[in-house]
Image (cartoon, rainbow, N blue to C red):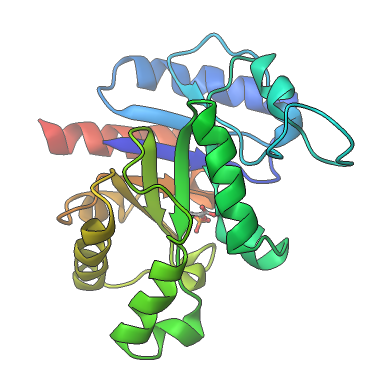
Length: 233
Ligand code: PEP
């Protein structure tokens, strides 16, 4: 399974080093694929069993893009994994599907592993299933769903950081629909916690989880990795 942590705008560089060190011992004992996305300024070369990815980068080698980082900044640390399409970038930072697709193609060309996020806001969730799927499928526009280094994360916007999650039956239903669009590994994300991770990982077509706030404590994130190991025993 794939167990990923999105640390968002948390943990300084030194705190991230401590974090990676702390989770390294449980990652070494685990058979899960573990990916951590630190804040951009906390990216570094880490000697650990965990894969470190970037939460964002501009689709360029380098240049005049104030406030952004480019490929050369990732190459400095050997980073080959990127999160694209996260709902906070779509809804807070205003990234359009067209720009997201451009970013996707740039990093695909560079051979990056791409964790590509899709998810619907509450108003869409409260409409019909058909409207909800239409909304989600629009987020696949311009995306190569057969890219071999693609991982998709289904993250309902209303479940991110709210403590609310869809029912397990809902997750099963949506994941079954999304698997029709792409056979890439499909993660669930949105208020995954130590106390619900096992149930979520047991749902059909859930190939892992993307965890935000509950992953900020290394101990909690390790418990989630261990929960995945226990399920595979
Ligand atoms: C996320 O932002 O990717 C996420 C899943 O956040 P949280 O776990 O805090 O809901």
